[in-house]
Amino acid sequence: MFVRHYQLNNLIADCSILHGIAVGGARGAIAGITVYTIQQSHNWIRYRQDSARVEQWLKDHIQDEKKHRSTRSIASWDNLTLDRVRYVCSRNPKIYLSTGEQDDL
Image (cartoon, rainbow, N blue to C red):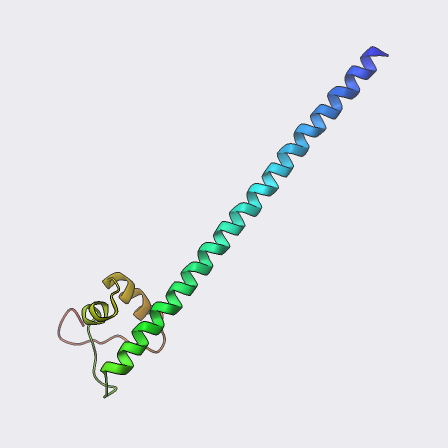
C-alpha cells in the first residue's frame, strides 16, 4: 500500500512539474508575441508620423514637381536624422529618388 501511495504522489508531482513547464512556456510565448506586436505597432506609427512630416514639408517647399530637395535639407527642417529621412523617403511611394549630379540629392 505504501509503495502505491508513493508512486501515485510521484506521478502527481511529475504532472505538476510538466504542467508548470507548459504554462511557463505558454506565458513566455504570449509575452514574446505581445512585445513583438507592440514594437511593430510603434515602428508603424513612427513611420506614418515621420512620413507625414516629410510629405508636408515637401508640399510646402516645392512648387514645381520637377524640383528636388536633398535629404540633408529635409532632415534639417523636419528635425529628423539623415538615416530616418532616407528610410522614410525610400519606403514612401509618393516620394521618388532624384538622380542629380550631386551626391547628396
